[in-house]
Length: 101
Image 1: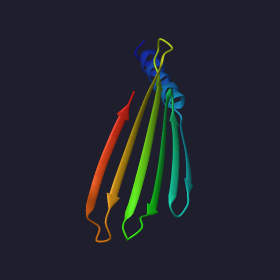
Image 2: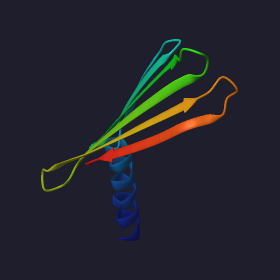
Image 3: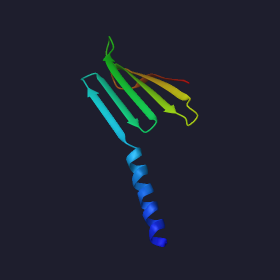
Image 4: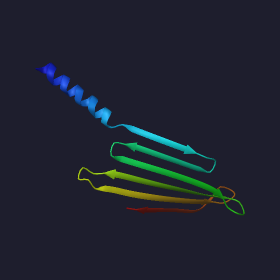
């Protein structure tokens, strides 16, 4: 009886591992990066861009979108937008973060 219980528990663990499949896609360019990651009922997208400012310095923007499906069938979505501006010396001039649900 104990063997059967252990066998069933082992099969349940194997099935749970197979169900939580993870898929990742990455696209890279010099000033642009895009990452998409899917795992089970969750999906995450990260998009990062950077460009040079006139007079020196850089501006980088990262947008993260997270989607999650609940057991009730609803889809929850959260978007985070981060913007960082730096001067020619590398000092942070402006740092901004917006979160929308």
